[in-house]
Length: 180
Image (cartoon, rainbow, N blue to C red; front, side, top):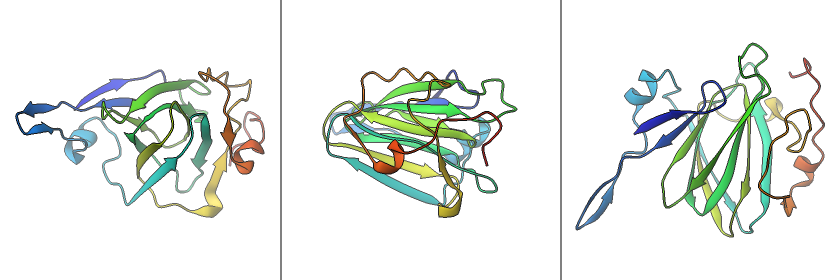
């Protein structure tokens, strides 16, 4: 695996190193020792999938608050998405900065998003499916979100979403120092 840093401190693109022969391809997608060596979460007690039928579906920007903030390892297992990490950690050198990666099921790449960052994505084609590894279990009372189109962040989405949930559309704009 190759770990490439992004514009958000602690967020990495994780590319697989494929081994191909006449049988097909083999690639390691996760190794606890490799993740720990990069000081990334290496234990994932919960995994989730997100299936999205239509191009232009937006989910985000979501995070889990203290005392159980979660890191995520996100991978497209079908289709392509514009995947975004947004740094909401006030003490971070990249506070309020964002990084985006095109996750592609055929490339098998992943995006590691550290705890304290919000996450969201926009599907670039129909029938996308994402697989998430979560460093914490979901706690509904700690689920939070910020607007995907908040000018405070200036996320450069490739196009306007076509489908967005009522919950995500109703998220409030960010006010510095108000995250809980």
